[in-house]
Length: 226
Image (cartoon, rainbow, N blue to C red; front, side, top):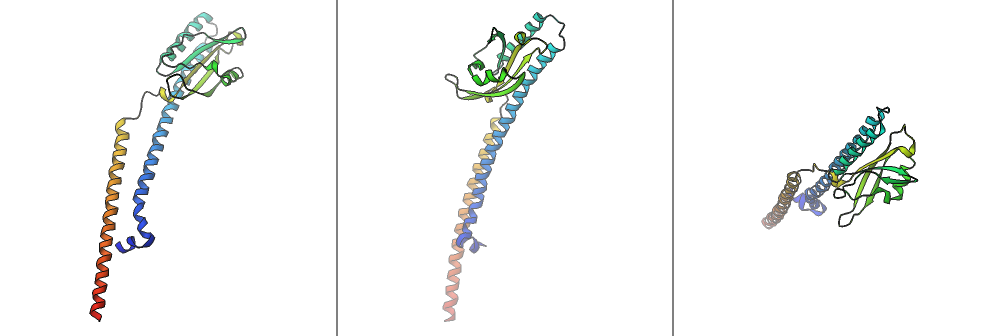
């Protein structure tokens, strides 16, 4: 066995444990990214449900005075916008242009979707939908906002409807992966890597000693035969 490992290309089989550890580290990084994506999707679903619930409440009672609906809509959207790293805003046509009609809390998110032509084109041609806007606010890293929008109420003329928009980024995630999970994985990988390298060096050393002694034994036998 030791002769097999020390001979020719077979000795490179000892590198397989190291290769496995490298692949395991890459796999772990991939898993962490997938978990972050899942958490972001859950956050996005939360704001989608919040907007849809607001629309359902308005649509369920079309006979109610619109001023009451409007007050509820404004309060609900502003509540969303106060949440950490959540964007929310309500817009309405004033003449031929959309204008923000809710108060913004820019310390949580400075995004203004009307600055992006793709946003305007999308919301003016669809009753509801989603899109991603990438931007880099001043003194903040680049981020991508996953936006969801919906016009409401649909029973009103377009110039009387409100456009409700809400969005999240990866920075909106409050429930992060525990630090000990990441640290434990990397510590475990480092320890396993160290032990594997030590075992590889030990096996190589033992193999060299075994080959050397085997050579000495052969030499002795040849000397005896003479």
